[in-house]
Each structure stands twice: as structure tokens, then as C-alpha cells.
Image 1 (cartoon, rainbow, N blue to C red):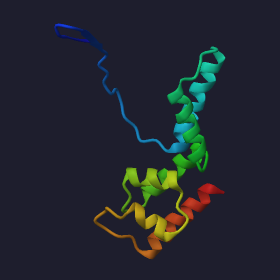
Image 2 (cartoon, rainbow, N blue to C red; image 1 turned 30 degrees about the vertical axis):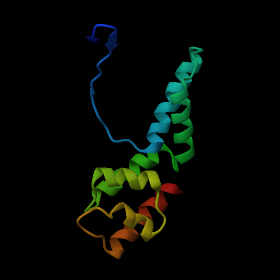
Image 3 (cartoon, rainbow, N blue to C red; image 1 turned 90 degrees about the vertical axis):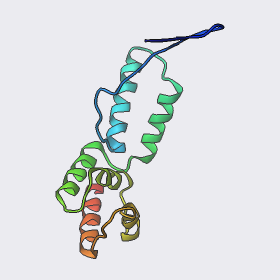
Length: 129
């Protein structure tokens, strides 16, 4: 805890640090948030505004279940020219056209061939079935 004081007031700040960091897809976040919600409901605790909004957002934008999204990310990472961040975005957005997919690669220093784009789209369609 950090104590910052001046002549008129004393402010207490709780200093937090990141213990670990992991990239997650929206469906995985949805699964985690739903577990938290179930635990809080079981303990008869109120869900905070931020938690309710996060759950609503995850419910609205998750396009597949968590296991399929993680499987898709794994398959995408096995391909060449695939960064983990882009694989996560592809699993979150689930692009259905080459143009949608190209937008995710717009800032990259390389471009994908039509065959590579089609292979990625096939994996996305397979995951959404």
C-alpha cells in the first residue's frame, strides 16, 4: 500500500502488479466470466456494474464456444505467417471473407496468398460448425 500525503489530505493507493499474462479469445473470457458469475450468485453476492457489462459484451460477441476457439487458435498457429495476436483476433472476429481477413493483416510486413487466405477461412468455417 502506498501512502501519499500533503498538507490538506491523505490519499491511500493500493498498488497492484501483474502476476501473469495470457492471450484469451472472447469465448474463453465468456467462460471465465460465467464461472465468476455462478460463484457470486451461489454466494448471493451482487454482480458489479463492470462485471455485468463485461459478461454482456462477452455474450454478445462470442461466436463459438471456448474449446473450439482455442482449437482454432492452435491450428492457426501451426500455419506460417501467424502471430498469436492475429490468431486470437481471427478466432474472435471469425472472418468469413478474404477482405475481412486481409484487414487483420493490414499492418503486417507481409501479405498472404489467396491459398493461405482460403486455408484460414476454411479453418474458421470448420470451427463455427
